[in-house]
Image (cartoon, rainbow, N blue to C red; front, side):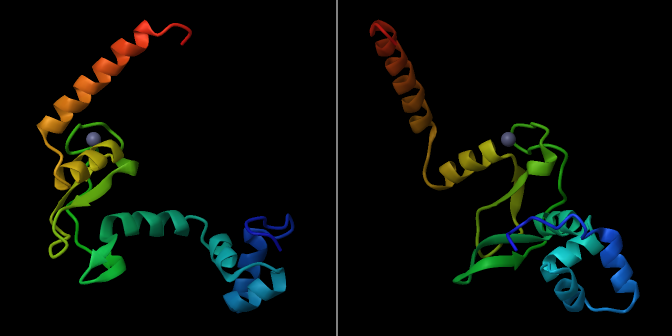
Length: 149
Ligand SMILES: [Zn+2]
């Protein structure tokens, strides 16, 4: 069967009923012709969302001690808004850390501020910001002189 399509007759109620009969998720998956993961989703529809939220607060995906992957990290409490620009985008806030030996040291930022902080870590300074604003202004002025735009 193809990817994410669940047959119309495969419902949460049917999966729950099979589960109450004592069948395992593997058996239910085989019986309904769906993946074990889909069975889990049917039995616990909020689970995916809950696990995703837990991951956001408790783990990071980065390279630690030479190992790239998910690592358990005790982050600071999730605020309601970006700690830099105060934009309220809590569900989208990302954890920015600056020391792979101490990934628990970090701040919660929106994606724009995350790019900004990564830029600063990579050596971006106010000189670059001023140069960017000057280039942008120069290019805009030149472009205003060119007809047929
Ligand atoms: Zn921000």
